[in-house]
Image 1 (cartoon, rainbow, N blue to C red):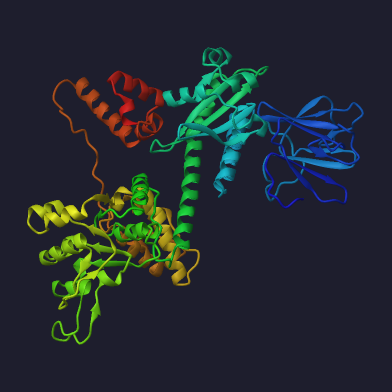
Image 2 (image 1 turned 90 degrees about the horizontal axis):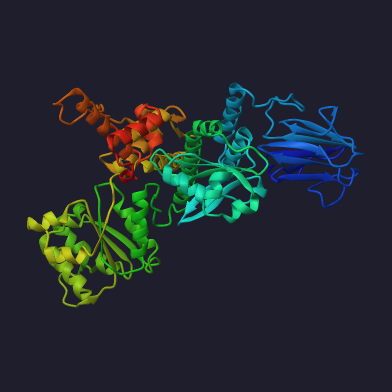
Length: 609
């Protein structure tokens, strides 16, 4: 067999005494014969011996030559027969095995046919597909397996997993390959997007829409299209399937069948994307370890936007003030800005203004001349001078004494310093970044911070959100710290347990990333098993308060009930960004019931999206 991974569905061919060879069945027609023009070339067979046809989600086998002898599972092939997983086809010294998925450990060829003609068999097929998907690390393989399963169980001629980027539609996966990455109706996708539900279009519906070149060229008979959304309402893409002319249109039963699956598909795709994104982030972080800066985490959308802005500012010399609670990563962000700036080859020095006493901080920043004060027996170069053409971060700049604030302002205005006890003015050329966990405007009003220095530093403000508002980052950060500290102490295989993960997502993290790192550091050391448990981390969780109706309870019962229902629905829509399906799940009501309530109560869903 060739060394490349097999793409399923596949055909394995083997001649007596020779190795197996795998062929991916991703075309509508796969011809088999002795001529080289065939997709599968078998020496000794008829020039055009047989073919495998993809039709309505399944593969059929058909002879092309009347003289050809073909057997399927030992029975002579007459006419056209549907192929099922593990069917064995024999001809002219060749053995062909049809596989829809990899063989299990205990599976042998051939096996009896199992058709999807009962609910039990149907859901067994779906569960088997999900098990395979959960084992996959590759996002592309996840997508491909999902759409092949959809094609088989809903019986369609083509499936596209479509993603929208920058207003353009593109295929993430397609089956079969001859369905083409561009074979989808934009009008159908726009309708599914607008209605936020699966749409079913027949030939009559398609003819009434703006004419699509792909619809006309492929003679599409019917379309099913559905938006795939994450729990937070994030658009993951669209699942699009069609049937061609000559085949029956999709029915309401087909639509209901897909509706029972699409949320599960959404979750699987979302989890696969998260898993791949986390792996990439951790890999980047670990590859940058020891290079003088850490690549900032960007799983949270707010953080992504923050780093986009930081990247733009990095190439300039503009003053940046970084706000954020203690432990949110202000120094990490500063190092990132320096690492992609024109000064990246120069020094980066961070000074915590709150960690140095008032009597020493001036000496640390400006340096001194020999004999400047008792004990100054030699010259000292201060940080403002030694940083050279690099970047200086004044962390907790709000802690600077007022007298030193005046001197710092002069340095920024004139670009020169004077050492303590010296008379010579020395030119400096550093870039200043400042950070604080205080509200400097309040400090200015209270007279504890100079307004002129504040306006000098406060040209552009980047505000780091606390970790409790970055739930997406909690787990990826945890896994990164687990890997880092495990490697440091020579431990292998440490993983974060599900219960610990659940607690961490519920915790408020008052100490932010610094607290998270310390908790994980301790857990890696004290944990007695490979799985990190809640007791290893030791979080103190407060009991959640129940959410109660907070409106006016006076008046008749009907009015109060409707007001409570409206508040409850609006809370759900806000939490899930206007996604009706996920809101219905949260409220434990049928989606159609929720839709009727939304219309009845006059709730505007669009304002939550």
